[in-house]
Length: 218
Image (cartoon, rainbow, N blue to C red; front, side, top):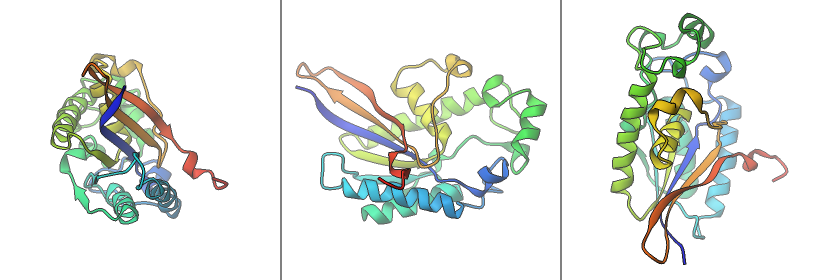
């Protein structure tokens, strides 16, 4: 018999204004969700709230500090009737002087996205991709230790999903330039720590980037 001891649910934020504008949305320039982004998160919140009386319940809601994460987290926590915990460790990569610039301009100068040269900063003062992954995986490991036995929901960046996949699926950070994961706005990803009848445990990626709740006929 298999039992689930801990769940990590990651909800990417809804569409943000910086996404629509194609700009690097760092802490200085993130201006929050669009109307569509709020609608996307409201649909996700309704889905999660409907499951609160089941084994897929959520016990705690955390969000990173950037405005698009806070707005997403507040909508989710209100629907679930849970307090929102702001977790500074769930912030995305530090963009340095790229904050607020068009991504096209940044990637043109770097000859690709941050993963292209993962040990180099993609702009002055920016955090190299592999440095971000190392920081984010350490933080997620500690967060999961603190929430052992719970079902925790994160309102997060797409980069947090990458970090979780590296950490929980045992993918070496050195493989980061060669792999990718779906990170749609308001996409839902679920990891489960499962224990079998012999007390062996493993993390399972049960759901990746599920957006069924965004189907208006759902």
